Length: 208
Image 1 (tube, one colour):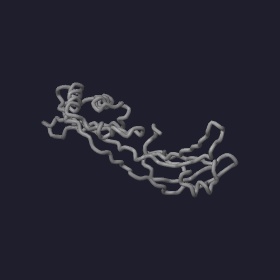
Image 2 (cartoon, helix red, strand yellow; image 1 turned 30 degrees about the vertical axis):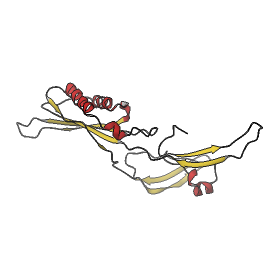
Image 3 (cartoon, one colour; image 1 turned 120 degrees about the vertical axis):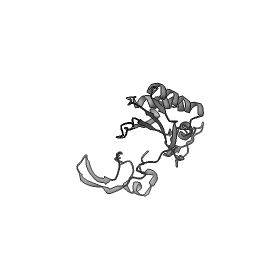
Image 4 (cartoon, one colour; image 1 turned 90 degrees about the vertical axis):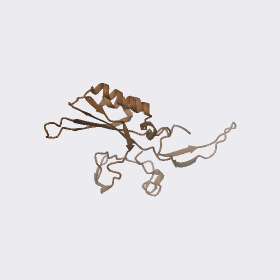
């Protein structure tokens, strides 16, 4: 079987039949694919004697071309601007553009690390293109990449989900969690008995 997603639980059902119309009993197996690839960060910096209003999308597209990826895979594009100090002769404006190359759950190779690790010529391309769009008053620092680390590596319930009220066709669930700018999903299951859902982990829904 191919075209499966990484780090995902699957259920396989199968049976056999022959030319005489005989059919075997169905067989069910559960498995999970191997771990998903990691995201990877990148950054490009520049210093100049004036400010710039370059669009972050322009920087993303330059970097994406050098990486050889669809620009939409580069997410969390951001720019940090540092203004000159109060000293009269200090006129250096500093910019740092950053982004994250998201992993592709449908492929194992190449990895995000290999995509974000540029060759000398590709790194030079980024610097040249950035210098072109920024102008002669800016000096571009070399492109760099680094491993991605989640700001919130775990998420947990602060108040476990519980039934607040119910009617003949609806239910109100109460809960609390320490989720930081994430999402909460609720799934209603009724194909199996409640005891089956409680005892069989393969029947329980997951984040996938």
